[in-house]
Length: 188
Image (tube, rainbow, N blue to C red):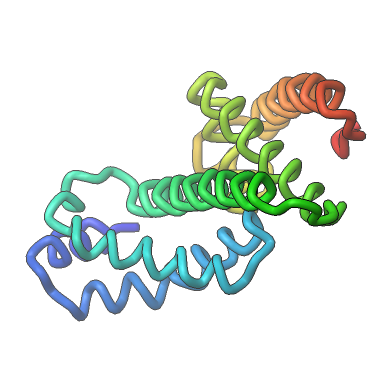
């Protein structure tokens, strides 16, 4: 976005109107992204607000950022991962402290889903940069293959090849994870 750099520079200079513009533009996207990750609308809304509070607090650093959207969604993803780690830790402590509380399968399934999501995020972060970028544009930003190809100046076939390789890697990781915990993988 050509105006994005100007917005970030003005935001770094503490212009509240620019922050409001960025907030109104990106908050719904961040909220949807976090809701999809956490499957908890209330927690997602809280985390989305926290991301923007942190963004305002760190506004002086924003003028050096190449891609605001990538930076923002990285912040959101990290906030979600920290939330999931804390929730899993708290859940484990509560389970240890309760004497005869029955295990609820849906809670266990949610925990496995969160662990699986963390595993996927880790696997994606270890992919080559081009494959990682294409995967994130497809799965996190919801772009179609031809849109990704246009944005990156690649052929649609190259984008499809990278996505197939990324999904193959993730399938292997999740299948090995599923075998370890007895889950049936959804990527088969």
